[in-house]
Image (cartoon, rainbow, N blue to C red):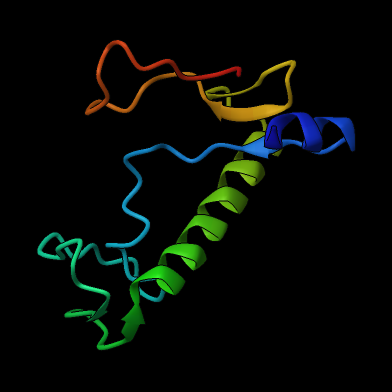
Length: 106
């Protein structure tokens, strides 16, 4: 539905890799907290000392990653593809992804 609505208004949907550590990565210094559990709703970065609300931090990281993907595509990055449906994503699956997961157009 989101793809359809965006495409209908001339916009595109930027897809972030499902394994991107949006809630575990510090939005300030980009250090990844591998010890973070799903039950941890707030955490403090060991590297820079920034205190994070997990959901707000995740939103900031997803926005930044989406902008980065869009900028890379606009600069001609050939590892990205814009499907006819208006979905911008990577051509290849993340190394941790299962072989039965599709990537690309919707």
